[in-house]
Image 1 (cartoon, one colour):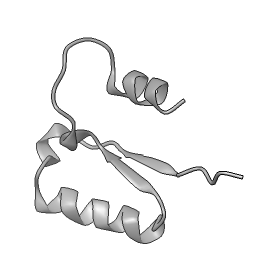
Image 2 (cartoon, one colour):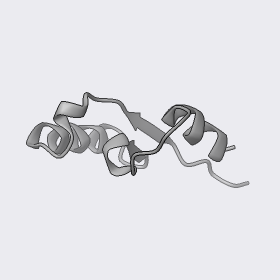
Image 3 (tube, helix red, strand yellow):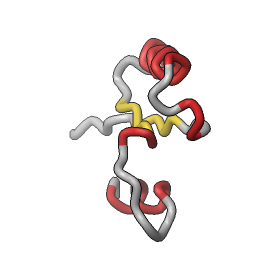
Image 4 (cartoon, helix red, strand yellow):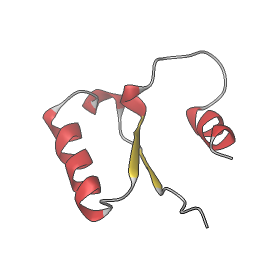
Length: 61
């Protein structure tokens, strides 16, 4: 049986992208969910149309 990878979507304000706050919050997520992949919106290139959640959920099925 294949083990599913847990994904945690880290939603946060654009103003906190690439800041110490963002780094510390990601560290906390990784601490409490050590086997999870953290999906961080600030690491995706900007794109037009659709929401990131629609794109992310459709690609993970």
